[in-house]
Image (cartoon, rainbow, N blue to C red):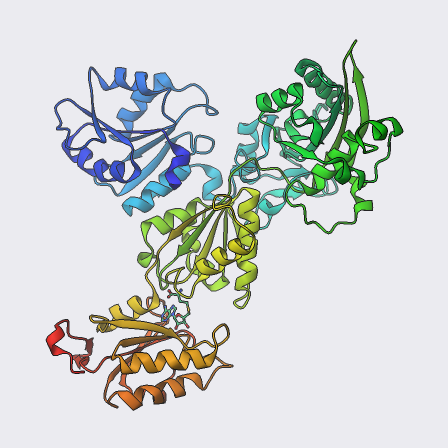
Length: 629
Ligand code: SAH
């Protein structure tokens, strides 16, 4: 569930009207709704609060990550004021007006997630989200959220100062030395960032600085402008040790080496070592405490890596001339995928710190550090397979809107991405691929999903009907997908045949079928067989992909197959661009349908033998007795 990221959530209503408004929302989100004792408990999601709301709120404050109030904003402000501590830890506060028209992100908009939660709830209620954060208004990513999708750790800094500079559209210098640059791809044209060192002082003075790097204390210098630090997790610590080395020595050795090389431990992605150390208590415990992944490789694998400081002694002992350096390099290059085709000789360039030996009386640890190009996100990725309906925003389900708005990345065909632009959130990664590149789109979604991002793959209509959903699942199957990573959720949409039918009446009232005339992925003989069967079976038939610039004859053959089994006067609707700005609708019949424009944006609806037109409506009777077979 998309809302799980915000849970536990508590909702609060004080009047019958507000309770009625919040109840269905709480039911669908499975969230507790607290009401005063004077209101009835009509459902198990509803709970009474005793005493005053103020006292009750204080008792449930710490255990919830978000609160949804249906109460006057003034009252909410007074209630929460004594409980607020720090924007890094305060819960998200949402206020919904009693008519359910507006969803206000009141407090903890960025880090607490209130801005996003407000948008998601607004989609559910078909309400307007009210988001007052400056970066949102400027269509810029919030600087204190920038690295979230990529798993970056937040370092020190004057976050408020930098946010203020961005909101005031002052020049903000960004020095990025590590980590994903995908966040830059969709910045609005007039964004305030300047990149790198080179541009400083060239134009206007810089008002703030954002550092994205693996080194500590970059801005100790005298400059007084506000600065913040993000640490992408790209450092892999290769480690070897004498059996039984304590966790304490391991921890202090890593600290020491990072200090010596001015590297930030926040940038650690994980540890890597030889497989015989997979049960080394000190290492395992250290990783567990720090929540670092521990990668282990066989001596044979490590032996393939060219290292600067090989050791004959180590080779004699464990079968590879290097543990720490080789494991660090291997981890940094292949933690994500073992199938990289990078030249093994190039790999050693990723080594930042050659092996360092730290000893105590009986213990010894060897440490080396390598830098990966790809950030370790530490997140479980998700792919949302989303059907966006025929075109207009009103025809998208609230669940699909929520998925689109929530995703870290959106992948789709550019025309569709344009149509759903109002649903996008500042800072989202948007990737469009040309129309025939569906497979590449699926592959890219899987790549981002496996990496740890949430990715919405957009199809028009329903994603599972001649859409992207099947391609993604097929591709996952080909990759030996474990069913979990990335996780998958499918969001249905109104498919073209439903949209087209709704615009002309009720043609699909009886048994119907859909046939795509595209023979790019299906043999034409097979399509012909299905056309014939549909015609014989007297199915109302929706033809998808009826004609393209390169496929002109299929629709002609389809018509002649139908004419063999159905009357020339059989009603036919040609619906082009249903629910889009350039919609056009033509009501015709089987005999004459080809005299009109039919293209790839058209759905052809062929009635059954009982279908008729009345007052420009296409109607297929519901009653079985009406069917004339
Ligand atoms: N997944 C989509 C279908 C994609 S196949 C869905 O469920 O609707 C593409 C075909 O769908 C087009 O060639 C056209 O036949 C039909 N189509 C898609 N959107 C349409 C629209 N808004 N109006 C009419 N036909 C449409």
